[in-house]
Amino acid sequence: MNLFFATGPRIMHEMGLALQIVEIAKASLPPELAGARIQRVNLKVGKMAAVVPESLRFCFAAITRNTPMEGAELFMQEVAVVARCGACGHEWTLDGPAFRCPACDSGDVRMLSGRELDIVSIEVEKD
Image (cartoon, rainbow, N blue to C red; front, side, top):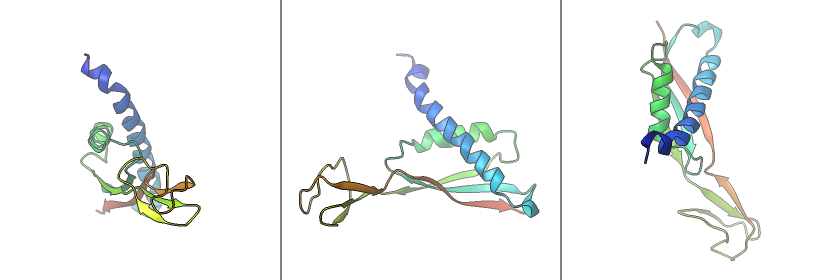
């Protein structure tokens, strides 16, 4: 099996995410920090966000090479999958797929967290 072909679509997904993260990080710098070096981008990544951290870090490093962001760290905090039952209000953390409430067995289940990919903060080095 061709390894590149087997991993290609996954890398492409993370490459798009990395490009967006870099664009947002650069655009988020206030004018008074224009030219400051971004040292670290802190993310919250839901367990169901379909992100492979190693692939995202690889893509981030690749697209920031030979730019002012080269060497910046991409820190990811994993966010658990939490659901709430619409029938009884029970909330719980999921370890796997859940289609029914463990408290009342209702199928009215709503995911509260676990799909997000948020930039929480950006750390810069000021000259």
